[in-house]
Image (spheres, rainbow, N blue to C red):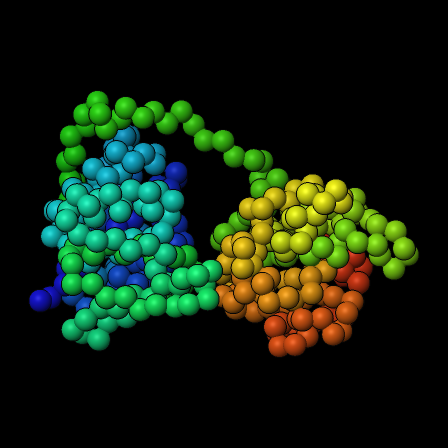
Length: 340
């Protein structure tokens, strides 16, 4: 049976499509079958035209103010309406917080199945298989399902974002009745730290990881935690890199030791933390232990700065190891960045 592939996306605050959404579109375009685009948001025509050359046979949309914000009830209603209108058997969507919260519920309403955290999709023409990691990204499984519709939420950074020209489209607006029950939850606003305090940036080109060495005694026999915090925060501000840390550094506060003031367990990278997918990574004052390095397995280019030439990074875990003082290196890097 031929599949009907539905790419399902939602617009961002300014009406555009995010990078992860375009990555999911690229995955949908790689599959054989009739391809349909479905969009949800306050205004969707501009977003639809921005991907108008993707080769979809239909462009469906649920549009309006109630769908401008992330809300389970309205998101489920909109996604369900689009899936039914498209007659979709396979639904490809980005693994955003908005869709991850609502699309499994949509699968239940449609009598289908949903799989999240998908990292790869392959098709040999007669069957479809998806890849997913388990056990802290140590085991990869290939999954297939006969149940339809099958909703797949694709992780960020797993494939190149779709690129193409804008083109006019005929947008089919799907009507969804807004009942009081759908808008019972009121979105009053969004709270976020100031941009200069934001340290976790999933879309950043570089992941900068700080190790416990930043808070240890340096070559003059003294600790320089304040200077370390200043160097790192300045680098993050100028480069707009994302900040990670090793478990040892995050846990130092519980042992009564001085820590960098802007770090939390949310920054932790590794076996007990996150597994980011940035194109490049730079580890400083880390030793490259296996539990920490496992979080780097999807970083495409890995470099490290460490005074110890025999640390774990030198044993094949980094593409390049700079044997140098991280304080001096980062001070010089900041100076060069500020000169640009």
